[in-house]
Structure formats: C-alpha cells, structure tokens
Image (cartoon, rainbow, N blue to C red; front, side, top):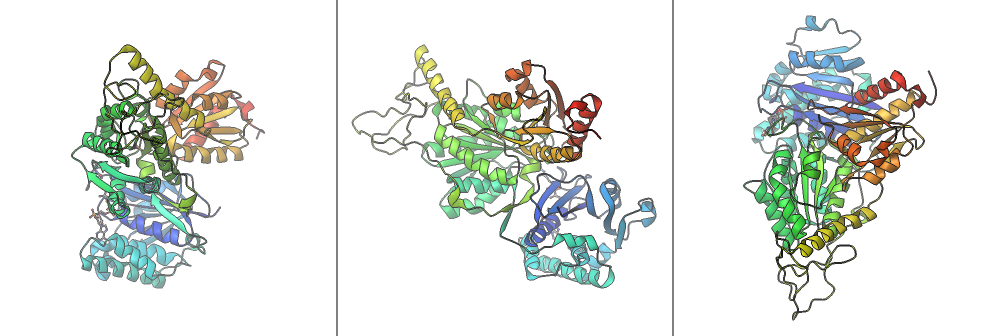
Length: 592
Ligand code: COA
C-alpha cells in the first residue's frame, strides 16, 4: 500500500483548516483515497493549535495515521509539539524566521526553511501565507502539475470574501509553487501524492455524508438549532434540500427543532434534526412523544467531549447512555452508530428506513472525529439503494373512524396524513386506544406498550447480523462501536502481522442492544477487549449487564480514551500486545 501522511499545524486564524481542505481535494483529484483528521480549539483565536492531517493512500483508509511524513508548521511552539510524530526520513516545512538551531537535535529528517511570511508579503499579503505553504508543498511534489482545477478550488474556498482576497490567494499559491520549483530540490516521496485517477470518487465529511444520506432517503424537512459540530449537516441541507422541494427550518432551540420535525413527520414527510450531546438532552422529552405517537423521525447526534459545553470541538463517544437510556417511560427507539464517512451515508439511509418502517425515533451516533473527517468514497449508484416508506392504509372509509393504532402481528399499523378523507386521527402524547382516543385504562396502557415494543421485536428479527473482522476461530475478541472501529480493524491487521489471532465485532445497530450478536460472537472467546472513547465504559457496562455469555469464564479488558482525541491504531495494538504478552501467550498463532 502506498501512503503519505501530511500534517499542517498553526494558530487558529492561520488558515490551517481551509488549506487542508484544498489539499484534500487536490489529492483526491489526483486519484488517491484521502481521509482527514481536523482538530481545532473551541476559541476562534485560542492558544491551542489548529491541526489538519491528511492520510493519502492507494487503498481505502479505515482511520487516521499515527505517524506523519510531512509536517508544515506555522510557528515554533506547534513545530515543537508535533515534530516527534515525524517518521524517520520525513520532512518539515516551516517559516525560516523559526530558529533552526533549536531543531538541530532532530536528525534523519529533511528541513525546508522557507521564508513563508515574507514570500506571502511579496506575492500578495501576509494573510495568504497558508496558500504560500500549500504552493511550496505542491511545488516540491515531482509529479504535481499546477492546473486550473486547484486554482478554482482555492477560489471556491474563499469565494465569500472580497474579490481581491480571492485573487491574492490564487496568486500567492501560484507564485509559491513556481518559487519552490526554482529554488528547492524536489522531494522524492511526494511522488506518492499523485497517480492516474481511476473512476470517479466523492469526497465529503461525515456530516455531509449524513446529510446526503438524508436526501437519498427522501427527507423533505430538516429543523435544527446550530451547535458545533452538527451544524455542517444543516448547512449542507440548507443549500440542497430546497432544490429537491424540501424545507430547512432554523429554530430557536433544540426543543423547537425536534418538535418541528415531529410536526412535519405527522404531516406526512420524512423529517430529521441534528444536534450534539447538550441538544440531545433537550430533545429527550420529545423523543418520548415520538415513541408514544409513533411518529418516524431521525435525530443525528454528532457527539463531542464532556458534559455541558465541555469540549465542543473535540471528540468523545460519551452520549451512548443518553441515546439508549436517556428517555422517560418505556420508549422504543433505535440507535445506530456508523463507523466511517461512507457508512455515515448508508446508516442515515437506514435510519430513515427504520424510522419510517417501524414508526419510531432513530438516533444516529456520530462524533467530532467522524463528522468532521473528510474521506474519499467510490461513487455509488443511488438506484441500488433501498428506500422504505411508511405503511399506508389500503383503503379508507369516510364513514368510519380511522383506527391509527390497530394492533397487528408486527406491531406496525398503517398511518395517514392529515387531510386524507376517513384518515383523521389524533397524534397524542397521552396513552391512547387503537383509534387514538386518550385512555388511562390499565389494560389499554399494557396492550399499547406491548404493541410499541412489538415493532422493535419485529425490527430485531429483520436486522442483518453485525459485521465481524478477523478470524472466526480466534479466542481473543474485540468489541467496539462507531468511529473507534476503524482503528480497531487496523490494529487487528497489525496484530495479525505479529502472529496474533483476533476477531472484532462492531455492531452498527447498538439499540435495541445487540445481545444476540454479542453472545454469538463470544461463544468461542476466552478473552474480550472492549474499546470505546469515554471514561465510564458505557458500552462495556451494558455488555457485562446484558450478555449471558459473559457468565462463563471470559477475561474482560477495557480500553477507554477520554482526552478528546481519537484512538490511534498503535494505542489499540499496544493494549492487545500487552494483554497477550503479559499472560496469554496461547492466543498467538505462532511464537516469535
Ligand atoms: N485568505 C483569506 N481568508 C482566509 C485565508 C486566506 N488565505 N485563510 C483562512 N482564511 C479565513 C477562512 O476562510 C476562515 O474564514 P471564515 O471564518 O469566514 O470561514 C478563517 O480565516 C479561519 O480560517 P480556517 O482555515 O477556516 O481555520 P483556521 O485553522 O485558521 O482556524 C478556526 C480555525 C478558527 C476555524 C477554528 O479554531 C474554529 O472554528 N474555532 C471555533 C470552534 C467552534 O465552533 N467553537 C464554538 C463551540 S460552541
């Protein structure tokens, strides 16, 4: 596999994120698969670094990389913070105002001292120094030819700014590229940046993939309240949904957002809202209403770090308990967790299908590291994607009242839309009879609770089993969920190279809890590692509580990370290695 990892770091405001986005497009257009990791502080002009990392590869990528080939640093502090992650033989591009003496100790790396800020002033203005750095990088790439496409990508990135600013940036990029060609030796391993493009690829973020999934599933109404990092979903849909005859409503808060979506769903259209942890907390009462009134709705939760305002721009998987347990009453719902950007698209289509088919709220758990990650996806054919619509009555009788909540074998009863003759009913949060009249009679509540949960049983009988990765015979199992799974799968590849035999299970449907799949997976396991990004081990606790298979003698290990950053492959591999080397040599297929 051919790989190249580039990291750009600087102070927020240096233009790290926008230059990374432009480079991502250039690499994708050059035929490579790209996956990105972005990290920036909560404050617009904070002390912490803004970081953009691209992993560029000849093959599809499961997670971000641990080590980097090229580091572009705009200031000394962030150069110092990141230089240790450079591979042997890697290269650094940094402003020559930084004192080289301080970095003498770093041998075996190529150092490009470039007067980035001065060149920016000479070519345009200092504001364009990020475009100078980009021009230098691509000028060092032996086979990258400057083209109209990249100039247009730069223009597009800054198109909301003054025309002069846009021109300055294109000019700074172009002149820096030529300057690098004339003044610097080409960097051989930057050849990996470019191959002949084969087949069309789509490049999008996890949030955009969810928004696109919503469009393909037939979503016609989105309501939301802006919150980092979910806002990108609303921004995408605000542009695209009206073109497809839909509407986007920016609300005053999350309570309004979800109740507007429920109103839209009641009126017959597929509806969605998106938020992050604090917003999901506010929505929990209305999720109860959706369950009780059996209104389909999709809720995307792009998780961020900590409770309260916490770490809005950093990643965590700590809304799991809130998503699966955080509602009042007995509330049937479905919770999904996509593992990567492509999966974010497909799971969102599924979320709509499940919401519509089983008439329940469906929560999708993404997170900062996944929602903001940009990834190349092979173009898919929309015609091949199954889209399910809600069940309608075969015939309505104008002279009879409509029995909206008829008991059925599957628990699913036909729905009408307001205005259909003979189809009137009350969508109410009160307990109700089959014909939707409020009732608090004991037998009615018992029967209707069972009806609502029968839909979940039906859904469970129709779900496809969770995916596994690795050897079926392995005695060592790893369970992960959501965006952590990519690093787990790569860690298993690394472990296999060491002769370890391991199998992973990564359920995408995490509620109703995948007890059966986990029990099946564990039937031949002697050792289990549960990997997730929260302090409490939220998934692990539920596994221990629910999975009967754990009564037998399975040794359980947990790996939790809660510092706001995603797992690296090495961290997971090291844990596997430590467990196996520590005491469990029998899990190796051969000894070293
Ligand atoms: N010429 C002109 N403008 C440029 C430029 C250039 N060469 N390079 C960058 N810019 C502009 C960008 O277009 C962007 O402008 P915008 O805000 O109008 O979109 C701005 O400068 C920031 O640049 P960008 O490349 O996007 O990011 P950065 O790496 O410089 O800074 C921040 C990072 C500021 C985006 C990030 O720290 C941030 O958003 N923080 C806030 C996070 C948050 O959401 N907090 C709230 C939580 S509740």
